[in-house]
Image 1 (cartoon, rainbow, N blue to C red):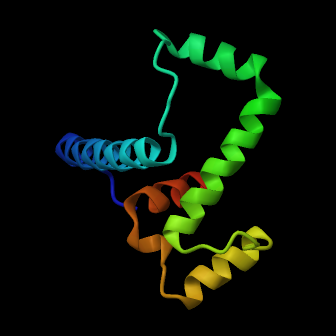
Image 2: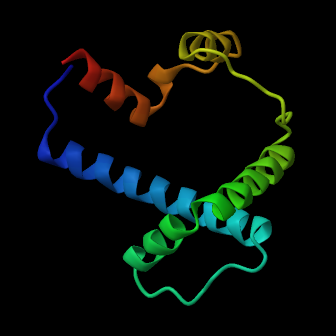
Length: 114
């Protein structure tokens, strides 16, 4: 792997920041659709975590419903079982999805190989 210059790192961070912003926006719009009546009275992440920690059983059911609706919107059958991680990787490869084509995945692979 080539040594990255400061300019390369800055460009990568800029691209990563833009991708994260886009993913955040997409997730926010999904949450708005899937959770029509969200709890809006939290002021900090700590308050959110405390609430969900106190209400694990109730929230597990809500989380399951949200994931079911999300999978349905994405066309994923509710009984979908990807199997082991190796089987999932093989299925992705067979469908033309290459981790090497994704900068984020390349970074993960590089870290694993260290």
